[in-house]
Image 1 (cartoon, rainbow, N blue to C red):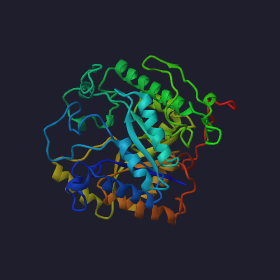
Image 2 (cartoon, rainbow, N blue to C red):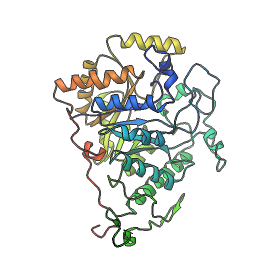
Image 3 (tube, one colour):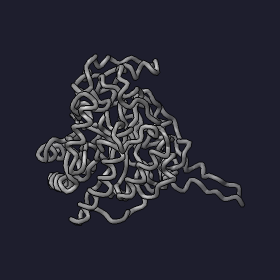
Image 4 (spheres, rainbow, N blue to C red):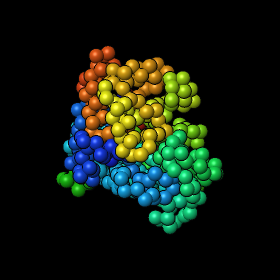
Length: 394
């Protein structure tokens, strides 16, 4: 069966999507709006949603704010938002973005573990480096070289904050080495409580077995963390770690530290090449920007006109019907892609077209689930429950 996820960000992937007649710009920063989006994705039985986040306002510039007032600016904290939505859902995975730069992995690990407890085992994490000099200026702890004064659209292959082509290789390697340490710290903290460490026996007055809480004693180049976590081991043991990768350094990070990697091939042949470069234990998801429906091309053209330029993206931009998209997904699956993270061009329009039209097209071909077959995100993705590295059985 094909795995499907959606990337949620504001009013949609297109910067003019908030001006669509079906959009709800007045509600973009409300919990009700986001709960509705996730409920729609769960209605379609999708594996998970990702929630975008960053340290700076959205911008058309590579580094620094722009002066545009005709595009969405501002967002909610992704981890906090996912925790708010979790009790309102029951089957879909929730994967917020949380940066590994300028943050402490102890805090991030506790936040993701808390999300896993609140969602009963449906949490994930998308670690992301934060390479902009303007991001670093918010914290004053370090300086990063400016990415330049160019437009973001000129660097479409470097979406997100993984600007390997715009930064010196040494800086990029440092950022991803730091990210790798942050993930390793989080994974060790998630193991720092054994699963039966909580006794909760009121009669004997024993709440925990202190011998089953462990110091992680991590000492690396960027972090030194004693542990244990303040949060008991998550229900999944290890929440699912996902990563976006475009080039060699991010690929290496994903291969070492992620359970799922999002890649951005332009063809089936390129997809096959990327899959061959990644270790078999990592689930490979291809990212696609999607505008669905018989009027998809006309809708995108209208949004391009409103924005003043044609949409460009690091990922392939698909415009067509749900049946045509189903054909493409099945074709790329033959190249070894195991799942797809779809970025709706406009919300909620294209999300509904995915959750209702695309899933129906895949159902007709017997290629997508008709009910959730597992209670946890790891279960949905076919990932085993990991042993605790500090437990006696390990």
